[in-house]
Length: 166
Image (cartoon, rainbow, N blue to C red; front, side, top):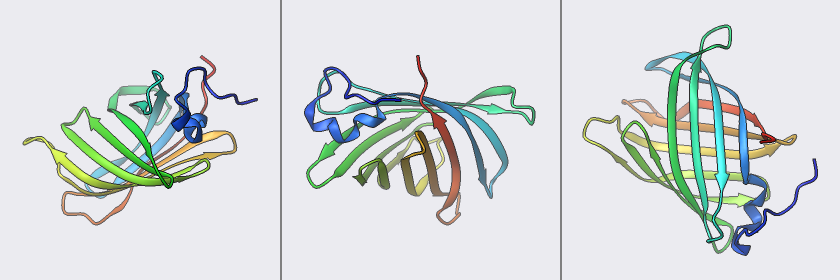
């Protein structure tokens, strides 16, 4: 597939233009405090001409046959490019957590580290996090490692998402 810079994209966002669009696929999750699970995952990056990307992610928990059991996590946020390939990202989750992330991009590889977490009074407290986004063989690869519930930083979820044509 030939890639073009999306129309109206703010020039500051050109290094992240490859992200713009809708990505859908499947992933896997595990953590010591929850059973392993499979999920369907949709990630959307779009823009309105200003110097940030809008971000939306949602998921559905799958049974062993790949059928949707129920909705899973969802999150929304904004991605801003700063000098020296730095990214500042703010993400809010449906579970009552909001996070500030800081990281770097190098071509189609993005690494983010949790900088400032906030949890609503009834939400779990995430103390550390690392996110990886990358373009691997034309698909968006995503991985999220976290520390919560007294656990050390470790793998939690990962998915591989082909670009959607719609």
